Image (cartoon, rainbow over all chains, first blue to last red):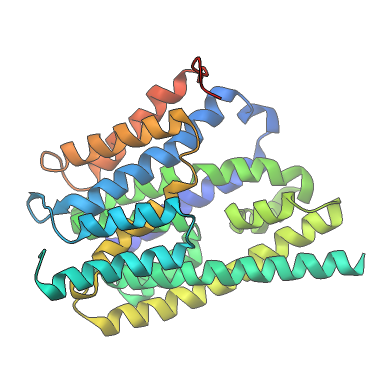
Length: 104
Length: 228
């Protein structure tokens, strides 16, 4: 697939949920099982993305400076630190560790 | 009434500015994912849903063009909650026919949350449109700024920008881990995705991990004895 087509298709796909919600009657989505799975789907995909973004390397699993950075991010999120501060400090830790040559 | 309107305006502006900061990190991370500036801007202008956009570039960054199908699917699945927001907003906005197309575009976390936290239908509508408008404006401006910053940096791992993507997902997920079911799903999903990464093409482990939501979510959570 061409990158541009993927962007347009993906945008249309995301938009389709928004439009669908305006078109269908409220009771169609009110089944507790549907809303439960929908909210857990967000959790599952985000968690999976955390795993992949932290450990995936060119060939399989890699342990590098991203791991302590993500641990720091989790600690900061737990302390309810604002989003942008979490991202900047986590990136900063990874950059520092690499600068010191501790974890490639 | 005047002061209530004023407060809707300032809340909307504040939420828009905060989202802008988040947009800078999206732009900077997108710059490291081999998307060009037009493609990154197209994502923010057309997809306009933070979680979905991060997922798209996250999968694309690890798998390149071979993973575009999985990138589209991940973005699509992460956008599902916007549909629930739309269901919530439809009776408040009360639009018919083609007039539904525009509010649908800005039906996102922020506009919905600001709207439903207002009193009275007028302020609810005002909150939706102001927040949707501000977030759209600042999100896109910030994406552009972030892309330029990220691009100027060059070597991304030297500045920890690869870790920034993972940290962004941690920050996004944290507030959602408020139930036992959510924590269980997160644990299973992260384990599945990491375990499958060496075996499957990039992007697919993320989609497989989504199955955990269906399996766990199928059953109603029963509060355990001694809990709460």
